[in-house]
Length: 99
Image (cartoon, rainbow, N blue to C red; front, top):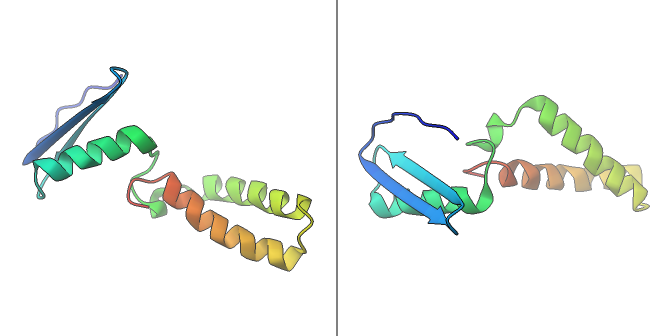
């Protein structure tokens, strides 16, 4: 549980199933956008705001895992590397709000 005082122009709230609650506060946009962002956060549970916010060590660890999965599936090393590049873009997008 976290409590933080924030200021902004538009407040959006979303409660999912009585268990997950999100409050988003925007400077700009409108109340509908703020609520949509709150719903997205509740559904996706992003850890980072932008893909570029994902720490290098988290990316490196995931890259290692994805490379091993590709190699274990029998793909040649050069093909596995290309597969991992695409998977890493997907990974950083999935763990971030704006990805």
